[in-house]
Image (cartoon, rainbow, N blue to C red):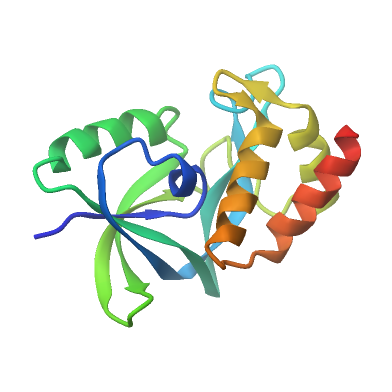
Length: 176
């Protein structure tokens, strides 16, 4: 049985594991949002950045990429993803149904935000998000790089996200 992983942020452009197949996919019931304070990858404890997370929201849907893990790489991929995504326990690992662009549904490893975690910061105004992203830097680099790469790759895939597009433009203006 094929193991699928749902990517909606940096996994789209930097999966870090062997991908056998990529498909545009939709996850119902969740919205892509900069609702997690990043104290490791894109910020620090003293000056947190923001990273994307899937925030549960009735009626929402998130368009992203379902990635089939290369055969025989399932255990290694899960180990890698857990080390990367569960670094601060703000994400929860879930097996959720995603709808592929051809209409079929597959179950995918998906990382969603724990709304009870201290790093959760849902409903921050976009302007505040832009100012945080414009200045934050973590051990994987500038928060701006994370935003710009994600927005660009989603656009290349034909996935529209108005908030991300607005944030990318605003942050470019703030950094100019």
